[in-house]
Image 1 (cartoon, one colour):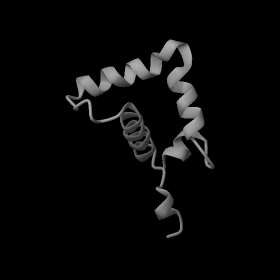
Image 2: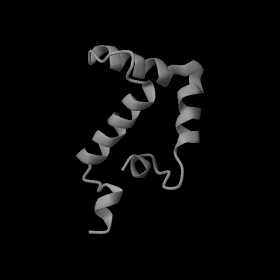
Image 3: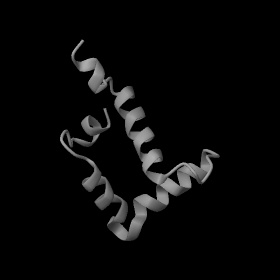
Image 4: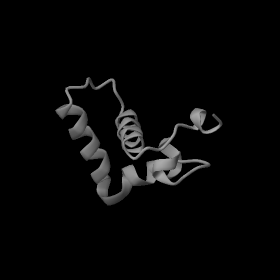
Length: 71
């Protein structure tokens, strides 16, 4: 579902990595802030925070998970 949200069906790690580095790491800092606001421990990576937010966005928009697409 995350790749559908991002529009990167084949591979989304490079675009995510680039986004985390863009604008002097603005997205990275924002995700750190969101992790702190949510009361999550530092063991939860910024990438995981991003992944969950993207998944929640897809779920809210009614996108189906890849495993559900064949059903």
